[in-house]
Length: 292
Image (cartoon, rainbow, N blue to C red; front, side, top):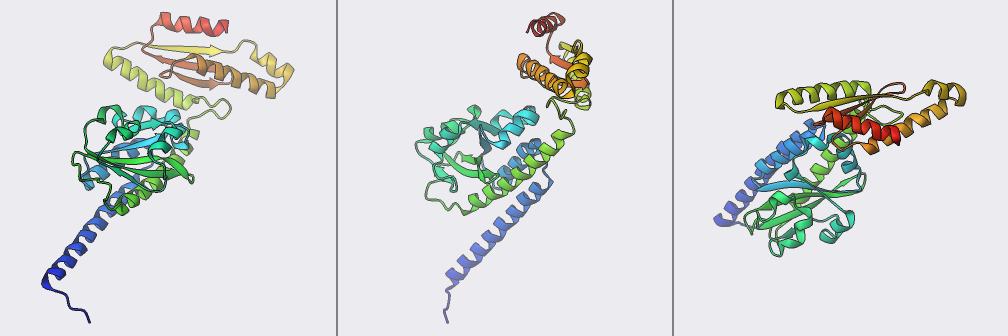
């Protein structure tokens, strides 16, 4: 039988209390995960919960530019993401910083090597960093990143088991959010052209009109229908008609700005919402499309 000294017993009790506190914090974060179903919540709620619960100076996500998550964000949630909480990076550049995609990378010297992972506004604001790989669909999607003003907080010899657990929690949350965002998008997307449908257009138009009134901004709306479309359907068949609609939608999407919204209103009718655009600029766009 082994006997423990009073000092050893105090140490054991201290570690037990630390483990209990860590378990409590994980429970708080995991509870947040269950309630998050969109990317806005992912960035605003989950990252804030991690930062506050574990008292970390900075928390953000880096995503590789070819992954499913970033495709969904660009298509449906780009405006909801704060610039200082997301960094998009080339997959090869990511692999140079994080060569082992299943293990966290910690550093408190030569922090310039992590620059590609860090949003512009956060650079030179910290003295140590932890990069924790996160996954989606069985492949590396990017990383959950922690940084602190303390150089000792994420020193390379620190234990990474806690960080790995957090990375797993965030990976699960990312998978849930991606699936929910894709399902939600189907309700607002025209299945043939991939454009916004009428329901989504009406919501977007109401939002942009409110914004234009509030900030005394400009807003133009273009209504387009395809000449003689019925003749195409009647003479060449509906498959060719569908192909024409898909082609026209692709052209419109290519010719507008990233901030503009293109929607299929009904049949061969389309609506383009042009924020901060004068009538003259809208007419110029119409002429370009007619000449294409």
